[in-house]
Length: 462
Image (cartoon, rainbow, N blue to C red; front, side, top):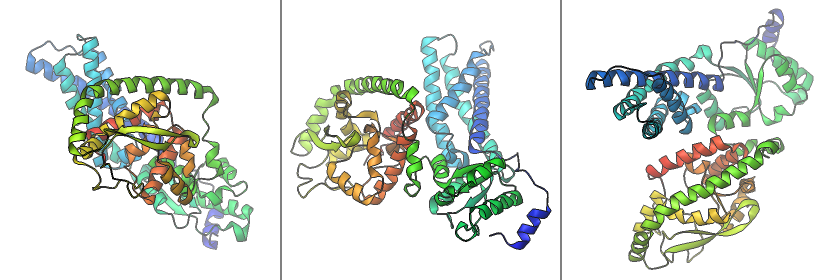
């Protein structure tokens, strides 16, 4: 409970509304996106100026160029997850996002060149990307620092979860929240009415913009309504971590969480049709060039170690249905003579050629046939083997929830994390999979596709 001094101060002073200068994560993202657009458009205008000075062309800056690059940069940064909480709070992450986004902005520029070559020439496209990247990074240093200033920080009151766990602590650090702990609010001894009264006093005392409730506190009758009626946002601990870290903490999954899992009746069927068309198109696009190099890969696999070229493994798909997954063999033929085991970093069972195939993810390309057959989708949680599924179901709560959607060749867990070679690693992977199960959309699918490309280019396979 609040001490008598704090209660007296709260009762004696007039009601103080929460600060209106505080910015939520979405408001910061919008401001940053507008700033990126202005910097990207300015970079294109500078490119026209430099092109005129160096090549002697008449300086004509069409409205199309800067406007196009303003949108291209925002789209590129969005696709590489450049507006995540890490992109806002960590300069290194922001620099990496700008570098990745520059590749997409450049590709979009050259696409315009091939369709309408008189709109922008090649030197302007290259210079626009270079100057845009430089200006956006400098803008992000200044604007990002301003957005994270303590004067714009959200003031939050945390009820329950005492002391905050590592997930919440990390989230609050990323979000730059000014947090006040309501550690003394105990509904067991005081009752819900008294808790509501003293929580509101605490909100007024600290001029809080937000109340963060643990799962237990969310169940208190009338607590959420009382906070909302005071003009204060309410968010659960689980939703807080999910929003800022793009994963679902297992400790916060309950019946309320599952209510948000079913897709919208309006968009479920169009989304399914769009995904199926994209699955077939991508399968064709990656299969055709793969067939050209397949004879060489088959020869290298056979020369490196005896055994079959292809490997079929039983995997668990949507709703627990099993299917045979096809892939190129990357391990010795006797790799599982003593039973199935997880692959680990530096696994001695992996052959020399197999190591290259895994790093480039070429061993997974034959699964395009599984996608065409409908066993898998291009995007979704990676399918596990039945032996591992049975074990993980017994040791990890809610593990079977990842089977609510079709498995995929790539997924959110693969983009954000790495292979899972143990139960503890599988827990973190499951948290990312659950985030995808609940939030899957065309937007998230596009981010996964782009993230997968950079994952492959970075040779992050194990």
